[in-house]
Length: 112
Length: 112
Picture 1 (cartoon, helix red, strand yellow):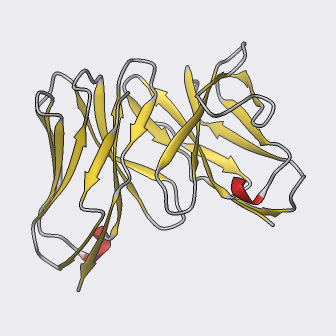
Picture 2 (cartoon, rainbow over the protein chains, first blue to last red; picture 1 turned 180 degrees about the vertical axis):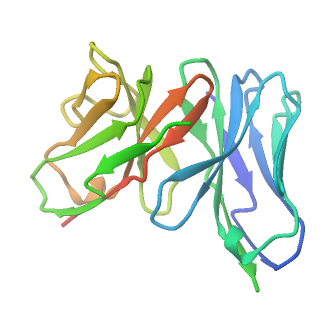
């Protein structure tokens, strides 16, 4: 059974710092991995999608990497801003059925 | 991408009653899913809504409690039946377009 873990559970940084959020999964036979952002009381916004054959994806200040063999993904946020404050969720797709298994999330606070 | 709307956005219901949540997508999609996010928790898949056939439920979720309809490729409903305070959660609809998944804004349900 696939399990997804995110570390740390919470993170507080001053504005301008570069930071890394970690996601690990127990079964390396994944179909894809997706990073989401969730603002309090809101739905999910897709940030980056990495297919199982890819090593990384970039969008603006965000970069996500995938290492299937070690069961890990990282989300790198460059030059953090207060507007980046949110919960970041990692989700693993284990097949082409579309089902996602989510980690518990990392709640990020960026202080001005 | 896909634009997803949900109704209602929030509701407060009495125990023992039922609530039907609607999910509308701006384009035809094959895969539609319903997730639950309990307070302070991550997302858990309830079921896959199949067009023209019964929904496929995940372990721990049953049709009598969470009946789902999928009358066409752009619309689905989830009913939370015979509600108890433990059903207080955010319920989210998601759709898969190819590989990526997109989420609706969620329905925040409080059961008193």
